[in-house]
Image 1 (cartoon, rainbow, N blue to C red):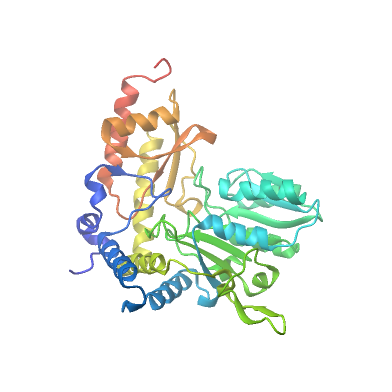
Image 2: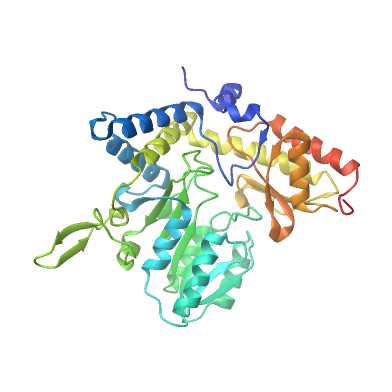
Length: 395
């Protein structure tokens, strides 16, 4: 079968059987695999689990092919990439790998995922670090001012989402990393909502650490994540866990224990290589569509949805309108509705899957490459119908 393009969108959608079951607008939580990639992934798992070392599918080679593809997306060397289980793993590799002193400070935003603030809260309790929070803004000057207001000689790390998971705000990542570097502060970027949506060059970002996952916008298997460390950043990390595969040189007699100088230091023991082979299949699928085409298509849908929201007085857009300040996520509040109940109503009335953002009592919509304008039309029509029937305050 010929690989479809986004210009042939009906064929793209046909590769996602889930779309026949409803309107899937929650890729920001879990993406879904395209059928050709899923079929190859299942076949890879079946052979490897059935035949083990008799397998001829070259799982190890497929892992390295996937690593090369991720490195290409991030414009870095493949040796700088470690495969993990998810973005949270990468955050922990950085936070647990750094050396902390009591009263060291970390700056984060007020829209970070639990993957960021939970391990930081743990470090606060166990190491005595201090967490400084700043409010999110797409405006560079505003973010600089807010970071400067909380920074101190004790600030060791700046952690922020490239695209925030709550309002979907795209932060000025390169400038923030440069601001941190100028002050001797390390930077960790959570790319969970950016990787696979728009081009990301970690060298241009200038971050010390970057983490992402394969199960959202890359439409890979659940249980796949990536972690990047700059050459300098890598040397600052002491792995909390080490096992067979972590050390380039190991000798009991001499006591030698030399870590790999690459991301391999974080990969040890028996690992589910088929997961990353499956991720590679999804990456190949998206690569054939063309990453620039994918970004342009997501932008088109994102712009259309924001326009529809802004045309309705009962809906209030929380996401910055320009795509350059946002991404594939659109967050809004509906007057008079509890977001959880509205989400349930959308599902029961039209089988629409969205994400609830409790922080803002809002709904978050993810417009992925497999969605289309008809999906958005169903969403808006259902919202209009629910609004015409009145809110749920008394229900």
